Image 1: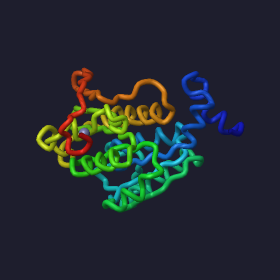
Image 2: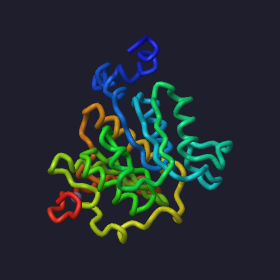
Image 3: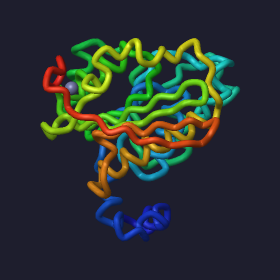
Length: 246
Ligand SMILES: [Zn+2]
């Protein structure tokens, strides 16, 4: 690592849990972010700023005016641009050391299968259950840790799924018939900074997993009620009858 990189990441390298070793692990890591909306915005920016070496951005939407209230990686001048392009530009100006791959399409089975073999972590920042179950399926299939977050109204939640370990539950263990538990986020209101809070926690969990430090949030669902600012942690188990990982 040259002097410029040492200076760029100095406040992180100062942490004994990180040190040069951890920073080098981040530089060698590849993270896929599914969705460049309200959650994907802070996730992508923090992962790039922190020094993750390679980030693949997956989103097939363009930037719309109603996105800008919360999707802070995009600017007014990006209106009408592809979200992956807009986000890629922002990441490059934040940290040119991060290699960015852009995937501007809705991935099908072969798309996921060709993308995933060389990935260290996948972040679910999508806003609907169809995508969430699909991402979980490929995370289990390819043994990649999944860092999942959701935010609607004033309510947020985060969890980590490392079903690869055999003992940890997957997303489907938690939401076997989940469609009824939480509504899709697409047409529901959401307060702007909530996306920053939940997305930042997802980014932090990714960094911990990449460096192998601390305890990941797997088997635990962290819930926030932002109106009362009450946090809850709900523990859950692997479902032996889970159609995905059981
Ligand atoms: Zn499962």
